[in-house]
Length: 136
Image (cartoon, rainbow, N blue to C red; front, side, top):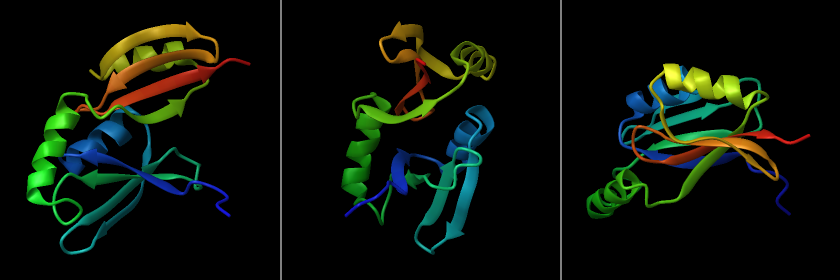
């Protein structure tokens, strides 16, 4: 049986721009950056968490046909692909302020929910991300 999630992916248009956002703005770290010829295997993770990685997968062949890549870019840009990733923090308000100073597109300011307080944002490509401070 399956015992854990090791890797998931987020489609991005430009992997260098994705590194700038996910590493320099959100604070993740690069866990792998490998050249496989027709594709670049680029993963990031929360610092210190070696159990889960996110593949920053370029919307392009060979993973998608050129036709499907164009369609996917349109959907991602419009924010029509739904929830891409969720992260947690110990202090949502300081995280929110830090992201504001880094010109991150915040789509929802901190809101108290039954499970905690969270914010919503979009990466430079349109992917929807949430960051939550869980209720104790």
